[in-house]
Length: 342
Image 1: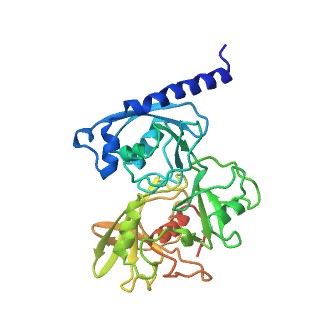
Image 2: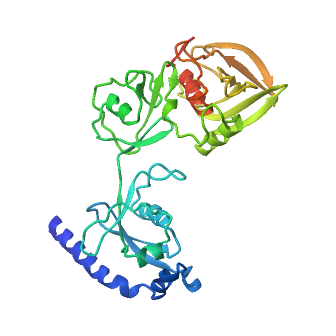
């Protein structure tokens, strides 16, 4: 029987042999190109074999990349070869790290110039053996971050994400009851949670492209769509709305697993805040009636029912913190039966 130590020694010897062959196999034009910052046109389509392992001591897998691929693309291809995608997903920058194995079998510090082309990195001493440092990346609301420990408590996790445990509660996605603040979690990479404050979610942790309070609703719709939301602006009469489709909701108690909503946009937005929403019909609830429903309207040939789902009086709309994305999170609390109920 082959022992684990024997495999490690064999793997190391294979690495030694391959490392010795790397420089000889690389086209000589790479060194010349580094001198004037341009790769010979004939090599633009050339692909070379690379190695990648889960840092620091995983078993090495092989894959190919073009010399003109940048290190970010090499990073993603290496992760694909390991069958473990990077987090957060593209187009966001990964929180995982890319390293390379030096010829002395020491790992480099994480590479930071991921826009650098592979050929130039090789010319500057990066080897063809890479390591992907997978971190304990988790998500709260719309933000990804690195948890400090797999057994962090909700209180500790909220603090890591810059959210006050005195103001926010942490929930599993779709859960009604909050997680006990001081009970250790069993975190796994890719876990997703929701944080809520008086019926509102953690807007303060969102990454803003425009300063809150100065953005337009068009800015917010664009930003929301970039996160995977299906949103568009429509007009009914003299009123502007944001239509959001395919919001995932728990079924039961809802008769559908996805909902469409419509949000009225004040002319003074964002100083004039978003409030409540309309639910696209037909839609049903196991109770026999839709909770908090008000009057129905017809917009663009479809019937919608107004849902009374307002912010808590102690936490009204704040244009310096709130936007379309945070309002969508607030609205989702309605379908989960948590948060404000007035």
